[in-house]
Amino acid sequence: MHAHDIVRDFGATAKLPDFALDDRGMARLQLDGTLVIDFEFDATNNVLHLYSSIAPAPADCEAQLRLLMEANLFLDRSVGTTLALDGMTGEFMCCVRLEPDTLGADDLVRHVERMADAVERLRADLAALDAAIAAPAPDAGEIRFGSLRG
Image (cartoon, rainbow, N blue to C red):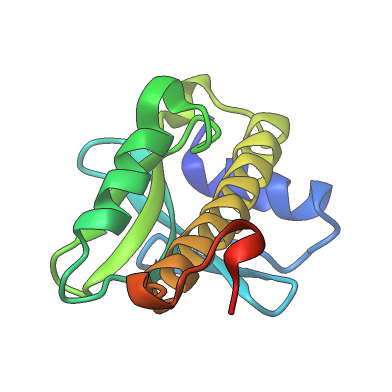
């Protein structure tokens, strides 16, 4: 089946009758007003890419990259998607590469649901990490234990 047909069938299944790839082979789906999943058909390689921004990458992002790499282990918290850093936009991305020849509309629905789940999980994980990084460390001189508090 061709990618254009699969995406159109996906739209019908998702009750989005006008959802389809445009002349450039692209479409954008917005979920819950906060999550955007882009569809892009690469005709040269006959692959359909799905991708979504997780969050902007801070300048010093070692801790965030570590979290994302750990989420990629066994594709556990990434829910079967791949995580990356987009060098052009400076954003952490969630992506998947699909072969239209082995894909149906129901398969595409599952991939979109997994991607949405992964983005939501990782946004929460990154927000918790950012909060932990931003929290000031207690002054060691002010920490008091036991009954000797003054």
